Image 1 (cartoon, rainbow, N blue to C red):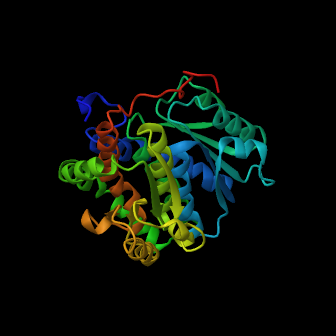
Image 2 (tube, helix red, strand yellow):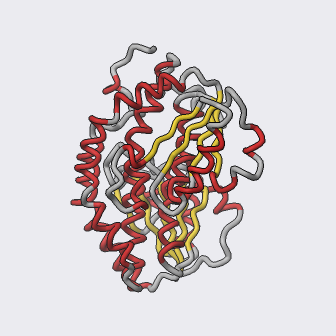
Length: 341
């Protein structure tokens, strides 16, 4: 195992997570209220999220709030998808939310600039409130100033979605989500301490596996992609793929056999039974199974907040998986301009 001071690893951001979430709620949400007021004033009819990588996964999760609790059309696009296949409806009744931690993601900046040119209301969600292409391109900007981008992006977009939907017609589920957000800091504070050792044990175990399928469903499906594709490949340099539990029977089922490895992310929403069915089947044929079950951590919040809770044990898991393979998760071969792309 790589001998490393984990406090120096940018990938692992659990230590400052709680303070960052508190700061966003106290300082960032009032800023977002002004943007939401403008959405109400403009009578926004559709919302498009544009992002890449982990931010896109957060956007896809937030999009579910529009799909599940409103009749407001919404879509989450990867930057070049938005530019190459721009939606037909892009006008003054459209909201375009661009998300990029650096504020420099080329395709996100261009997408937001295009949306603004077409008359859409635009918001840039980024770490610093000024000094980047995204802050120049967007009409409104929220600078969250935190390193825990999964929580920053989910909370910003959840808050916008829940507040705006409720402004049209209050939904009790969204009221519950907004109320439960305030409980997150104390839950995260506990998880940062209580979940590390178990995740370390599981990370060491998984480091022996050459390829890992990550399976999720419902509000955890974007998180499964984030972890099973982005984190596995980019940060741990481990081959892997994400599978939708709802589609497991239609293709993936045929490759289940002894030695094939799986990580299941199990929530407490309506899709739980679908993932449990997958787990039951897979365990008939292989012992290489790890399950991150919300009921083993904290399932007292609204099910749509589960991605924010399970992130903590998963963050530790992938960190220890990586260093158990003697790989620093901050080290890249190609990303960030090391090789022209």
